[in-house]
Amino acid sequence: MPKSHKYDVYARGFATEEILGDREEIVKKLLEMAAVSRESGFQGFLPTLLLDEHSTRPRSAARVLWDACQKAQRLYGLRCYPRCHVKVDRVGTAKRIIREIRRMCAILSIEVSTRDLYAFACRDRRVDIVTIGSKALSALQKGVVKYAQLRGKFFELVIGYLFEGGIEDQIISRLASYKEIASLTLRKGIPLLLSSGPQKVYNPYSYRVLLSFADAVLEVPADHVARSMGSLLELRIRENIEKIVGKRPAEGVFIEE
Image (tube, rainbow, N blue to C red):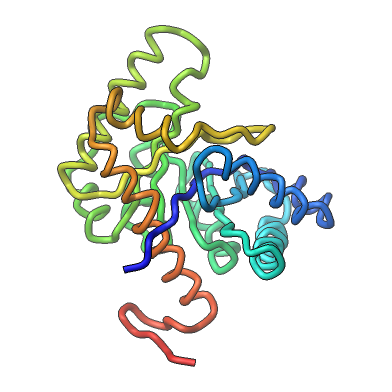
């Protein structure tokens, strides 16, 4: 079996205005990000489009990022695949955005800050990653966790969120929530991703730091995270792209060229 590649799953974070306003520079930025990700121990990265209820022309922005990643792959051999990250307060808004952009992103994630969004993200087949927001969720419903297992969801913990605000009690509360969720993913066999989160200047935590954080702080085996950020994520990216280009029209069906 060929060796899998390690991915930075939340690379930088672009607003739609940035993508649409500077189209000619996007590939150049991807090249710069590729160099930084390699220095941090990754062989690939997911440039992330940030989408909320105020985002302008999300479909057009997703198309621009998709095309830029395709060009970077074709011309420079980069392993960069577009991720669309939805961060909203209401399920209805999330559904509207997803309808517009799903077929133009290799990976789709929803940041969940309410029980309704969490339940929706775990149930909806179009969503790949359930990102735990900066607001600690209360105990996760067992029935919803079962959907996450059946639908093949990835859970994501954003390390950068831990230290938001700098208030010690909040950090302790978030860390306790992170440890609980990490333990849950291990027990239930749900892939766990760790990321730096959105950054104006791309400077991610290194791959080794993330694995050390999993082992020493979250108290889950580093291999659990390594496999999630490597072979499992790479397989999901490939399957999603095959669906988008029409090679995989139905679950379990593949069309040979």
